[in-house]
Amino acid sequence: MATSFSLKASFAATLLGLAGLAFAHGNVTPQEVDTGNLPELGDEVRMENPFREGNELDQYNAQAVQVGESAYSGNCAACHGIRAMSGGLTPDLRELSEWDDEYFINRVMNGTDRGMPAFKNSMDQNAMWAIRTYVESLPKPE
Image (tube, rainbow, N blue to C red; front, side, top):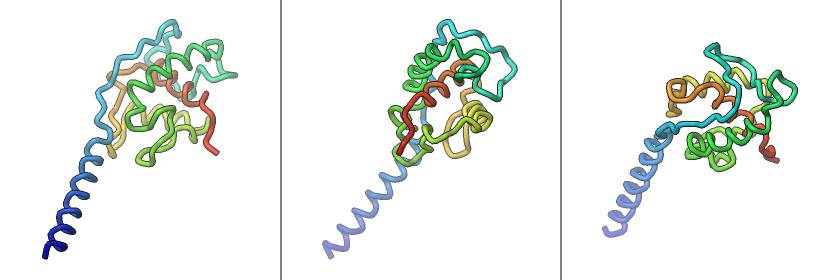
């Protein structure tokens, strides 16, 4: 009888723990991002990272990486992991490639129904593209 109670209690504790993880995912309070001297990108949403090497504002690439690292740490790392190394609950952002720019900006702006908050009201696209630039600067997983 004690074994049966122990198994039920253990099972209940496991379910409670998993429920806590599910509700915690995406529970991020957006942090303000100081975009420093990055040029203002305006209100029209760009569909390609302007700070990427080879693009129109690539002279700001190094600064965008620095801004992006700070912005990522305050807004993304809680769910997507330190240095974008996901623990498995969220996508590994280092695996996104250049053709994913439109997907990236739409996801960051609008969030997801799985718990990622929308950042369009708390972060401008300068900060969003700086985060993308930072993630692109990280070594890819092997």
